[in-house]
Each structure stands twice: as structure tokens, then as C-alpha cells.
Image: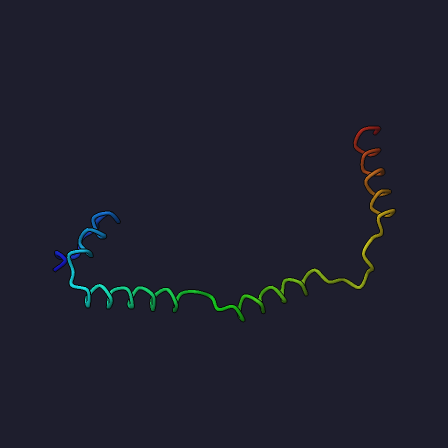
Length: 83
């Protein structure tokens, strides 16, 4: 079996795992998958978070038109380089 728990490199851990019987390796894989499943954020939670972030960006104003953006950029350039 695996020696007493001590810090080991991934390559060492893999070598020890291959020494286990197949049933123990399967149990280990199951335990690892369960630990990952419990720690991952579910898709509905991510979708809800994304929706909340979109809500933070909403304003009562209309989005600027291409012409508005061009004028803002031109004004910025004039302020930056001419004054």
C-alpha cells in the first residue's frame, strides 16, 4: 500500500497509485471526482452571477452612437495633444 502520508511529487504519487489493486484505484478516482464535484461552482450559480454583473452595467442612458464615440475620441485627442 501507500507509505505513511508524506509530501510527495505528483510523479511519485502516480507511481504509488499504480501499485494499488484496481479496486483501490477505482475508489481513489471516485473520491477525487467527488471532491472536485463538491468544490466546483455549478452552472446555474455562474449564470446568476453573470446576470448580476450585467445588471451592474445597466444605466438609464442610451448607448452612444458611433458618431458620439467618434466625437468623444476626437475631443480626447485634442485635449491630450493640443492643450
